[in-house]
Image 1 (tube, rainbow, N blue to C red):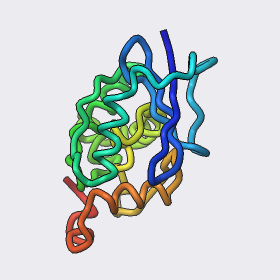
Image 2: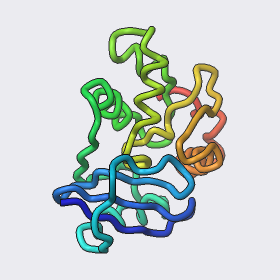
Image 3: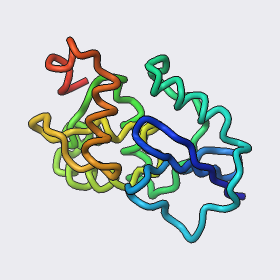
Image 4: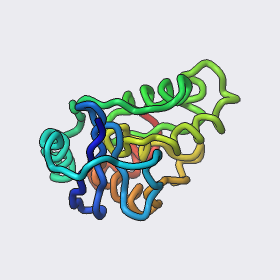
Amino acid sequence: MQTHTRTESPIGDLTLVNTDGMLSGLYMRDGRAPIGTGLGKRTSADFEQTGEELGEYFGGARMEFTVTTAAHGDNFQRRVWALLRQIPYGKTRSYGDIARDLGDPALARAVGLANARNPISIIVPCHRVVGSDGSLTGYAGGLERKRYLLDLETPAEDRAATLFHA
């Protein structure tokens, strides 16, 4: 069974999707649209933990999420998303870094495509992936939101030193 709710955040309204008791989507307004034919019934039930953890994250009190997730994707996408979850709070990795972690530096473009298909943004931190030169590149929620999230995670005095590489 699938349900959804909307919640406010400092980066705009977020749509949360729950499938069979697990978070299966987190989408930003004006970002990539949720995949599938529908989001199910709108309800606030089943989203308490996600809402609480997001509030703590945006308030600077949470660095890791514990909410149970169920991202739907192919095997390669799930491997990439698992590596995204390993990028520490306040750090970034490049698409090439992740491709090397997968065992093939030539997979950087495929990593980028999988990153773009991440259905659980913020919690599966695709915003922590940057270009090989440290530049901000593509983000389904927009580069302004990506910059906001990276700035939120990195104290001002550490930004220059930690913008690139975990």
